Image (cartoon, rainbow over all chains, first blue to last red; front, side, top):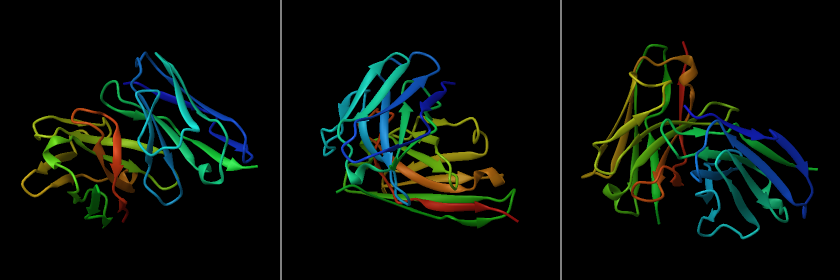
Length: 107
Length: 120
């Protein structure tokens, strides 16, 4: 089974900051990596799939990069509505796996 | 507009059974794989199970294999999760989630979730 490790588990940032969340896979997953945003009490929302493809309707301040085992989600200029928890997910092979999450909080 | 509506959650004793359902609308249901993803209170996301568009292919997390069974009825646009031998660590909000593409393994639409509580 492929393990997914996210870091940091939480971070504090200010509106306008550039924020990067990283995700590491236990083995190569090529570009089969997806990112989700979840706000309290709500279902997750797909932001990026295939490591770097922006889901329709997602603001362009979100971007994804990486391949193999190391990936990153970057928010170029943090907005008030971006404070949430972010999860990576590998879609390379079953069983599918999510990272532990990164909570982005207001500084 | 895609809509996914879960039902069937509730309180069940350890060792008991429960059947969750997901009613889908707004897309051609039999063209997409469907999944169950759960989230224990205050914890992260855990993928549970996947079923292919036609229903022939299924996959399970190790934690539920042999206890849970996923199925779908494409004539009714519904998906189900039969959960047997429930344990306290099965307590979670269960989401149904639609695959983004026919054979994709990532999820572009989610339901609002249904809470399953396993407790005596």
